[in-house]
Image (tube, rainbow, N blue to C red; front, side, top):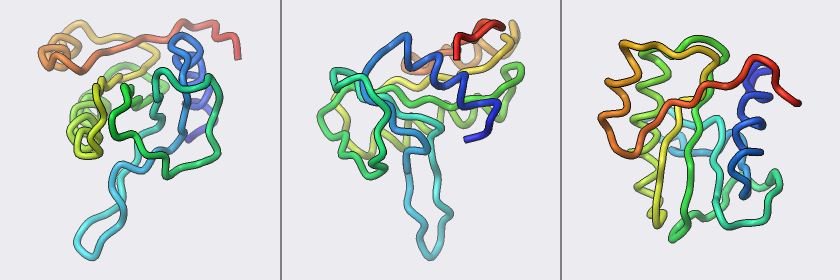
Amino acid sequence: MSKLETPLTHWYWRQTGGLLIEEFPLVAKGTDNSPRWADGLIALGEPTEISTQKDFDIEGLDVIVVQTKARRLGMNLMGQCLFSLTLVKQLRPKLAVSVALCTQDDAVLRPLLEIHPDCQVVVCPEDLDE
């Protein structure tokens, strides 16, 4: 994660608690595909800490997939949010929600993402306590 995005992801994680896995692998590299990662994955109900383990098994857990951009909500972040949800569901969590975490909202784009019931936009405050 970038120096700009990590504090935002940590801020959101402090609101939810649970185990934070940064750069969580959603798809492994294959002969015909590139790897894909979530900026963060939060396993709710687990101890509130940052994991050093990247290959955490989320089957049967309640999870939040976090995609973070240190700018206004845009279509790239929206696509990451939506498709990360689809990818993480293949790992068979009990419940999965996907969050587009950004620093500014977009009144036109937010409703287009939030018509998907498990996708939401979260806007970080300007003065983070990091």
